Length: 328
Image (cartoon, rainbow, N blue to C red; front, side, top):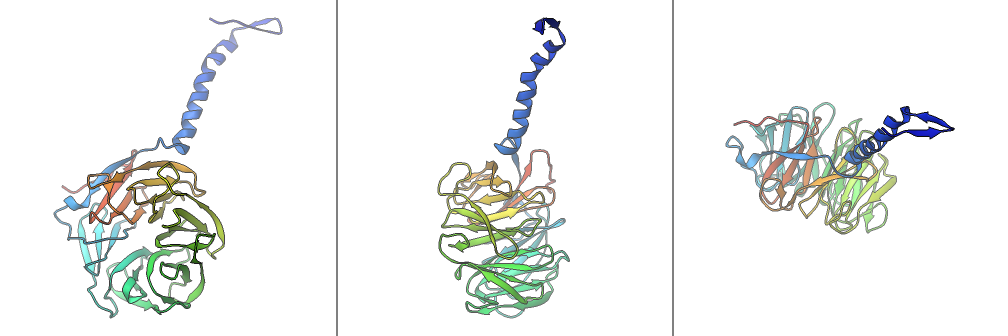
């Protein structure tokens, strides 16, 4: 036993404290690092390409998860498909065309608080709104560069009060509408400055209605208020933690953590201020690998669904503490 003398008095009580102090410090360090430096793990859960009940998906650029369902905009088959959380096909709607309920390369989707689904109908240069079973509600948008007009609508995100945000990658702007398609405001232009954009695939919102934009050629994520005021940006060209090579997909979970996938096939997870947490994935076609994946979403349980674009499949990953069932 170690004996310490303090002010001339022996103290055996301090012995235990001195011995466990390094352990306390180590545990504290590991606790901090489990949040900040990437000790959190995500495990492969599902590859929907193996599911015999799944209707064939062609090229996909986005995926939408809700509490109970998963929706996929099928880019080449001009339709929207609805699945259970484990990949069992439920229904689909749409066909090629320009009438209400038809699509020409649907790109992205989101859902509002009432369960209505909004789809960016890219080559028809419009937004269409449906109920969750595919019944047409309304549409809006015309070809052009003015308010309420589109040239290349991609990402769609719905705010807490059901406002609709649309990223137009050709005009390089974000437009905001109410749930009935009435124009509210727009911001952005082409460039590399704050509030400017290159090519945009997807966008998402956090619990405070801050908007995150995956700015592909500028290799960064930009964050804005719900009114379009610039807050911050993070990222630069590279393959180190916090760096990107063409970030295309961005999603925000229920804790406001931000997930980004880029051309390296890597998913990175950040806090809402851009602090790196963890990452996984690589380029390829095996489980846990991706090829030109452009979209991802996170369900309320923290499972990450990835639109693995060139591999024409959905992959699902779960936090190591979360299990997700798979139909056999």
